[in-house]
Image (cartoon, rainbow, N blue to C red; front, side, top):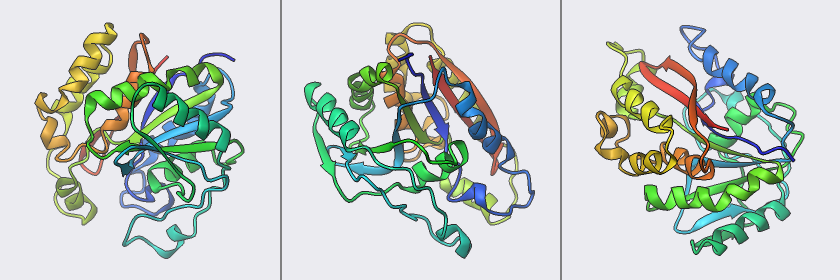
Length: 270
């Protein structure tokens, strides 16, 4: 099959794409970006492998459930957002392949037969792939959130790209919830935040030398505005996985949006 790209997508906030907002166009660019994603792929994926900022385990843990339920792991939203459906099947064969690749790279790996799709997976994928008509497998982060190990994880998973698997990192490039919650509560937004770190991150991701790119991403916390954007980095680390899986492919920015007073971006390799 044609080699698949690797992509990092911002997954918004909670069930944001399925709610009314003020202003009503708050998430329009995010939504349009996700809806357009399938049309930018070289061919229809055989399956999706999703790494979300909402699942951490001691070892890299792959979901083996053949029919994953949805995990409504958010709170305080309208009742209808707890009735969403996205019935994509799992893929135990792909899960075994993922587990094997991780172990072969000398990284800790585990399986979870009960895990469902968290909202970092099903919310954006319900927008991008509403028919849910091909398999999807979710993979956890390691709870140490070590940047280098997650780049190594991506490198281990890279062969999947030539097997028709679209590797998706789902998170946010800005995730300081203290700042963003003020916007959610309708407080004053002031200036848009996150621009300094977003500019640094864009230069790092688009660096033409893969080794230098990965070195910069490893030391992201020393970047200007890094810890302001990510007091805790679980929503950034999925980007490290897809950068590792990119190999020598050069990254490019595919979305820059301003939502809830912050800059959020998407990136793609290949």
